[in-house]
Image (cartoon, rainbow, N blue to C red; front, side, top):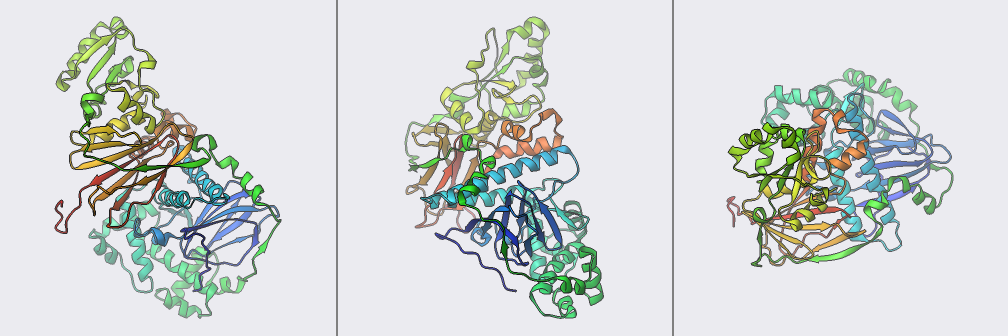
Length: 584
């Protein structure tokens, strides 16, 4: 099979361009392709499915997917991004065998559609920023390298998986667990590498060390069809490419793709395509690529404006920051002694729900509870009840007549929450509320709780403010905290880890400005009371940050990376592990 080649510049692992393609033949390439319609209308066919695309629509063709643009309007203008996923296999070993689907909003709970729209908004904004930076006069390779890494992370973490309905690939009806996604990518890889042979459910069950019943149920529940149909779907994709690119007979194609007989191949193909393989081949006519009305790059860039959030991300060139951590300093501060929160109970709702949050509260080791005296004046038994409830926690309870908003933590994002918690010491914060609380009224975890929880995961955490960064030490881990709270530009972080032992294991957690409950709710354009419980859980799970794993190899420093405005990153450093699995 002849793959269409994609040209790259400056050794970047992606190519980006603006297109006005009217018609083209079916083709495929080793890269994934992302298309965003900026103007006009077009049709985009991936295998047997034809999509009508309008301005603002986005679509993804996976690695070696057969696809084509056709029947475009005269004013068509598209943003096209090709990403070489092979350059990211060290991070995502099965990425070539992952399905990335964003074409359809599934019918179902409103929250699913809203969450998909939120993810799509983020994806469109990200590739639009990439386009602006890619076409800049002085192209910043470090910036673009980090942006494409973030793009791949967004795809893997938010658009992986699909659901089959009426022979159409659609976005998953629910978010799958990380373990299930990993299983399905391994199963998909196995089928794609062995589709020519006889493949049974027992084969993949044994590979995964799971029962056949479990694997069958997993595939049916998450993908919408049974194991055999999944195998047939992959075989049919290869068969369609052979019908287009080869002169093999139908019997040869049937055998080459692992079908038990030509009749069974005919039956399966007709069910998916609505025509036989012979009809499909007869009706297909390749054509030269044609183009519609000409355009300028300035026109194309202007059409990106609705997808860009300039005020949030800033468009100034990144500021270079070199971080050289020195954990030998002696002036580390004990986090809990200095920063344990003082939790304010200033509403009857907070008082009544205190028991529900008891376990979460214990985790962040509050220094005290502060009770608004106006509550006890209205309900004299309330203070006595709270004393009884809090007695097992051994946390003091004080009453206060004046509780002012300006004395409370009010962090709209995780970066601001880190800054306020570490600078203000024993900060006051409401149990329930909006930006100055640990939890929203419906129980979503706020950025402030997220910060306390980060330190709660460490044993006896300590910290030291080194100016450009904050050093954190706790038990078996050392960490570097990086914040961008006072700049309109991204920070271009260069790590100089000369004093860190070679072969150390590194874990980087990124906290973008928009990945917290406040901004997610705003992007969903809904009230949290309307969200189903599972969606609320997904939003809470999202607060742990986007995670990447590295090993500090001899002679190689970690790649530079960007931290955007109002965002934070934590680089955790674990001691090297020997071949026997022991700490070096």
